[in-house]
Image 1 (cartoon, one colour):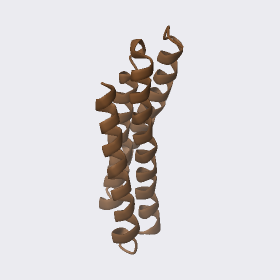
Image 2: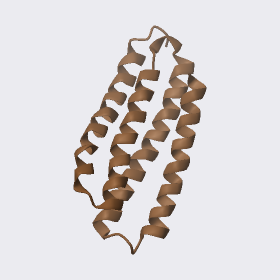
Image 3: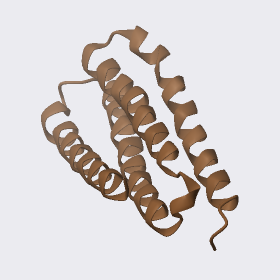
Length: 125
């Protein structure tokens, strides 16, 4: 499981870097400044949570009894909903995509909370 989340985090970081480059080069001048900012927020949070997935992989290998993989799934779902909805909103202008964004944010919060809680209750230091 630690290898799975490490690969997933690495691929998510790759996508974030590619999306950031796409936004900086291909979308600048094509999107409004607000839409471009929205796109960049999606990239930023995807990258933060790609690093979070790497942390989950490390936590799984360091605290195998903690079940930190649940936090990884929360981070993955949060990335898909939060960043995905911001990408869709900025590229299409369809405001309904913005309704999904807070759900992704809540999943991020739940992932961080779960990661801290499960490591604290783990018997291994």
